Length: 110
Length: 112
Image (cartoon, rainbow over all chains, first blue to last red; front, top):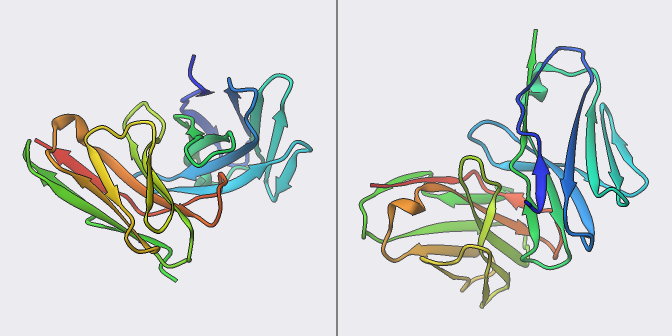
């Protein structure tokens, strides 16, 4: 079983739609969780951290369920510019233990 | 601030050739990392450094060496390139040990 698993997609949604991605992780000792965004042929960039209480940043909402070991990202009112691959990232407390999922691709269309 | 920069952006090597990838950061970060990204796989850590003069192996270190002689620079070397090392290489840095890392633009390496 992969340490971090994501549905690769692609998720094709129209502009204005709400879309949600899930990610599951296998290591119950994982401490911190993040969503990164990666545009085609570009570097990953931190989108947001994921806190136990859930957190929101504009149109983006991230949630963590430790009991079920999954993380979610909700994007409301999708924009064309949201088209990218979203990477789920799990940190287990050492410099060498940042595990990246393979990413979920989102394509927002007119 | 330039953030994290990488040189070169692209490179084509023949099997057995050697090369060095350079990563530089101007954010005074202690931690630096080298990853490779292959289709269908998440980013995988090759080597990392927790400070000037220190390096450590990551998940896939074989065939690579690194050096961190200056805090702002982290070099990745391939002594004898193999086709399996065809990949996109990303350097990253962080202020502290955490999941919040800043990435460079990547180096696309092809080994023929």
